[in-house]
Every structure is written in C-alpha cells, then in structure tokens.
Image (cartoon, rainbow, N blue to C red; front, side, top):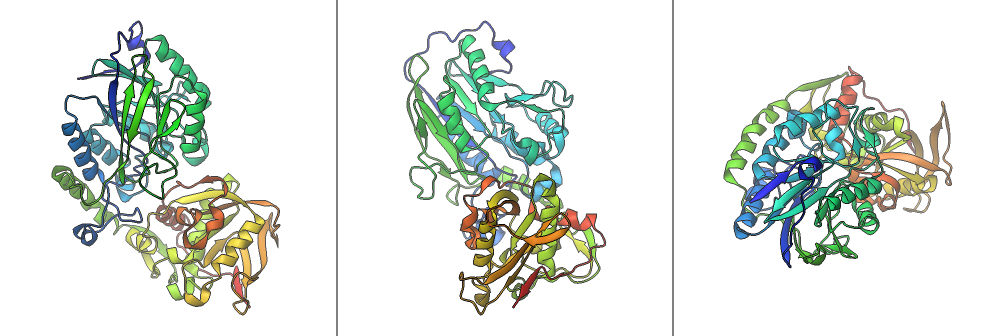
Length: 526
C-alpha cells in the first residue's frame, strides 16, 4: 500500500525508521507525451487506422495504460511508482479541443503517482494548469516556482511530495526550466528560481524529515539533469523530460545508456510522444544509497495491445475533433499555391504564408529569419473560406516551432543545401521570411549557387554578415537536421517544442483575415 504525504508539513517530525537492506523500487515513467492521445506513426504524428491494422503504430494513452497495468500485475506486492516528467499538454488536436481535460482524464485513469510541471502546462496561462490540477488526484509538483502572487495556482503546486511505498518514504522533488517565461505563458506572477539551488533546499528539507530516498522529477532537459545529478548531493534518481532524449542500452540512436550514472545518481529519460514507457529498477542500501540501478525503456509498439476501454473513450472524444476539422478558421481572397512542383523549386505563396506566420509568432524573441522546408508543405488552399482541415492538409506533420541562433555563414550554408537538389524536386527547398536570396542552378550544387543573401536591418535590406549571429525560427524537423539541414543541429539556444505549426498558421490567417496570398520576390532565380 502507498500513502501520500502531500506537503512537507504533513511529514514533519516523521523519521524514516529502520530501512531494510536492499530495498527495491521499480519506477515506470513517461515524459513529453505532448497530447499524443491517439497512437503515433514513425514520424510521431497521429497514426491512421490502416497503419494501425498493419501494426505500424506506437504509443497512445491506451497503450500506456496496458503497459502500466501489465507491469503492476507482474510486480504485484512489490514497490512500484508511476511518474511523469511533464508536458502532457500541447501537440495534437486533443489539446487544441479539450485544453488539458483529455490529458487529465487519461492520466488519472492510467494511475500516475506524481507529475512534474512542464513548460507547456502554461501554454494557456496559469489558469489552464490550475484546471488540470483540479481534475487529477495525483500531486503535480515543481519546487522552483514561487506562486505566492499567482492566485490561480496558490496551494495547488507543491514543492515536493513524500510517498510511502512498501513501508519506506520516497521523497520526490521537482524543477522546471527557467526559460519557460520565453517558451510558454506563465505570466508575470509566476516567479522562477534557480533550479539547482531550489533542489538543494528541497533535499535538505526532506533529509531533515528523515527521508533518505529522493527522486528528482524534472523538466529541464538531459544536459541540465546531468548537471543536477553532479551538483546536488542526496538525489538518488533523476527522472527527466523536456529535451525529448532517448536513453537506451539497445537503441543505436540513443544519446546515452539507461540509466546514465553520475556518481551514485541514476539519470533516466524516455524520449517523448508516448512511444516508450521507461522502466528503472533501483536498489537502495540501508543508508538510502543506490547500490544498483538497471532497466530499459519499453517500446510501445504493436506488440502492446491498447486497453480496450480507454481506446473506446479515445474514439468517443475524438469524434468532435473530426467535426472541428470542418471549422472555418479564416478566409482567403485567392488560391494559396502549395503545389509541390512550385514550393520545391521557387517562392510559393503558401511558403510565404507559413514562413510569415512563424516569424510573426516569435518576432519578439530576438528572431528575425524564418526558414520552412518546401517538402513540409503538402497542399494548396482554395479561395474562400478556409477550414482547419485544409490547414492540417497543408501541414499534417504536427511539427512544432523551433527557435535557435546561428551565424550568418550557417544561414548561407543552409540555403546552399536547400537549393542543392532543386532539379530533383527534393523537399529541402527553403521558403523564407525576413530573408531574401538568389540562386543559380547553372552552378554546381553546394558550390556557390546562392548569392545576394539579404536580411532586414531596421527598415532596410542589407547583406547578411557571415560573422554575425542571427535568430531563426523553423520547424522542429528542420532544426533537428531533417531535409539536409544538419548545420542546424548544433545551433545555440535551441528550443524545439513551440506551438504546433498548423495552429500558428491558422491563427495568423485569422489575424490577417481576409488573407491575401502573395509572392514578393524574396526568392529569385538567375
């Protein structure tokens, strides 16, 4: 039996008692589900019925429930925790439609024991997070948030929680990335404190209460998690999210072993989008020190049969979404051209629309250039009323906005790569905003096809400076190196988990309704 102590006050004066040697705990964990309520395909987008029937789909909340239920049954009578490291919000039409209510219902049904606040939990302001917390019974925690001035969240988000599992007290502490003020909408009343200093204080509080088994459930990304493990004594396990990193001992694309050990501290994270369920077995000695830690994320593929009851509920909640696709979101005065033969070879009006929408969304974040791969534009939009379904047909991949900083030379290199396969109609062709360039297909690929690259400086177009740093926005696929944009993989201050590109485009069209499609010579051919 597990007993929750939901505040430090409740645990004051308690002591850990005598801890038997070789206390074993299994931690099942997810992170960055990003509203993948339905199953996903290999591109992390919503899977269709045909692919599901062919066994090509992964994840979805019904598979998470099946996997968690099976593990709990297998480990009956043993010590098990089910944790989530934040960001169940944002990323599918389920979130757009239900604003966290679907995520709350399904996470409650799965039976999570605790969850960290992720940055996207603030995408609809503090009030959106407050509604989610009110809808779930498990604690939602984050230790580096000062919420004393935010009435909607005051008393709802704990610094930490103490759970009693198998007669032992397990302390769970948490922090959220401090740049959430830039990546989401926490508002002026949510104050962020230094992650490491906050964790040190919470560890000290728990140790004073006699808790010697402490898990940091964080939403800061793997690099920061590794720093935390090295800098904060007393943390036994870090269960992280935010960077969408896969740690694994068997997957060749993993960024490190599962767990990654930093001294005696085990660090784990399990990719994103409901594709994996992390499973870590931790053994503590009688002093509460980790003596062994091993495990592997479980791939939630077709071998995991989705829970039938939850699958039926997903279908029920999904029915209005099909109707939502019919919702009129804007009006266009003319056809917005998205023909692949145009958008993969020259400036096209739908490329301008999407690039302009991206840049408009983040222009206040020091971003001045947008690049959208032509291959990510999948259709034209007819003149007249524009439905959300039409926007999703143009942008079907559930890509998110990515912001990052690179040199002017890297921008030039990206354009060179982007026009290097024009003759083959490849999807890397760069549609742009805040940028002008010329290219010449008579020149050999990557040998100087691009010239006259201009950027806006004030109200004037000026030559790009190869040595200067520029802020860019693109989609997460391009920023991650897709379509040949490998030069962006090592960009500085990259953030890949912004709002959905289709939503951004629809909102931009609505703001500029009736939208008038255009080309303006930002891309020219010699």
